[in-house]
Image (tube, rainbow, N blue to C red; front, side, top):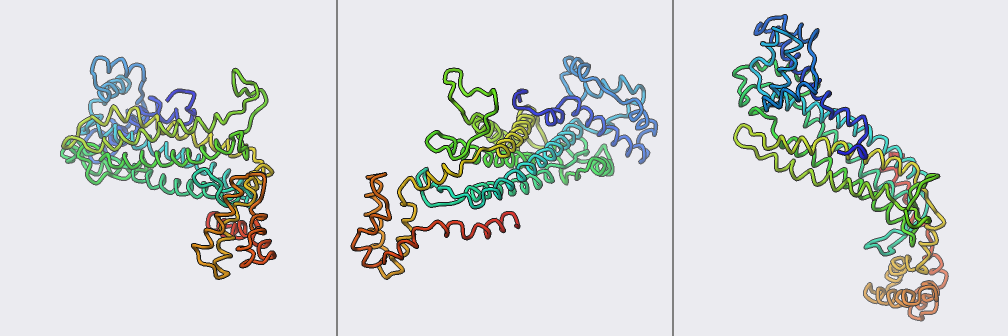
Length: 433
C-alpha cells in the first residue's frame, strides 16, 4: 500500500524487520524446546538468544543467489550465531516458519484494527446520542419516505460496526494458528511438543492438520471479514456523501482553514475523505477473491498462494486500518445541520404523512384499496404542484376524506411525535442506554 493510505503502526507490522524478528523468535523458541527434549545441544537456544540477529538488506542479497527467502534468512542469522546455527531449524520446513510468522502478523493487524473499531464505535455512539431526536427525512430508493432521526441513522451504523468487531474477533482467533510439523505435516522430523511450545509462547493455537501449510480457508475467512467491514465503511461514507450534496446539505465533512476544494472553483467543499473511503473499500473487497482462490492448493502444499498473500495481506490490513481511523475522524468532526434537515423534511408539503392517513382511513372502516386510492389521489396533486399546495390542505378539501376523518383527526395525524416515540427503545437495544 502506498504511504498516502498507510499509518505507521500498521506499516511496522508488515515491515520486513518485523517479519524477520518474528521468524527469529520462532526459530529460537523451537530450539529451546528441542534442546529441552535433548534433540539439540542446549547451547543452541542460548546462542540464538544472545547472538541471534539479522540484516534485511543482507537477506535480500543472499536471496538473489539462493532464490529462497527462508534459506537466505537462516544463512544471514548463521552469520551472527556461528557454529551452533547448524542445529537451527532442525527438522523444520520453510512453511513452519513462514506460515506461523504470517499468523502472528495477521493477529497483530487484527489487534490494531480492533482498537480502530473501538474508537469508531465511540465516535458513532457519541454523535448518535447527540442527535437521537434530531428529525430528518428517511429515504428509500433515494426518494423521501418517512421521518426518522439522524441519531437513528448513526445508531444503525454503530450496530453494523459492533457486528464487525465480533466478526473480527472471531477471524483473529481463527487465524491465530501455529504449524511446526515438518515436511508434509507428519511430524516425522520434529516433535509435536515443539509446536505446542512455540504456539503457547506466541499466543497461538497448534494447527490440527497442517499438511505442511496452514489451511487457507482460515485466511479466506479473515480477508472476507475485512471485506465486509470495508463494505460497512463504504455504506456510511456513501450516506455522508449524499447528505453533503448541495441539494441536500444536511451534513458535511469538516472543512479546515486553508483547505481547498477545487483548483478551478474556489467555492467547492467536496466530500473527498468519504470518497477516498469508497475507493479503498473497493481495494479491500477485491482482495477477498484471491484469498478465496488460495484455499485450493495442490496436495499437501504448493506456493501459488504465497505471491498473492504478499500483496493482499499488507494492502488489505493497511487500507482497512487507514479507513477506520479516517472514518472516525469524519464522524468526530462531522458538521450536522438540523435546520436543513427539517426544511428538507417539509419540502414535500406533508407527503411524508401519507401512511398515517392511510392507516387512519382503514381504522375508520374504509377498505385498504379505497383508502390507498384516496390518499394517492391527493398525494399526486401535491407532488405535481410542489410548493403550490400541501397534503394537509388537499385532505381538508377532499369530501371523501372529510366524510371519514374529522378535521381534528387530521391535525393529530400530521404530527412528528410518533416518529421519535420509540427512539429510546431502539437506543436501548443498540447501546444499552
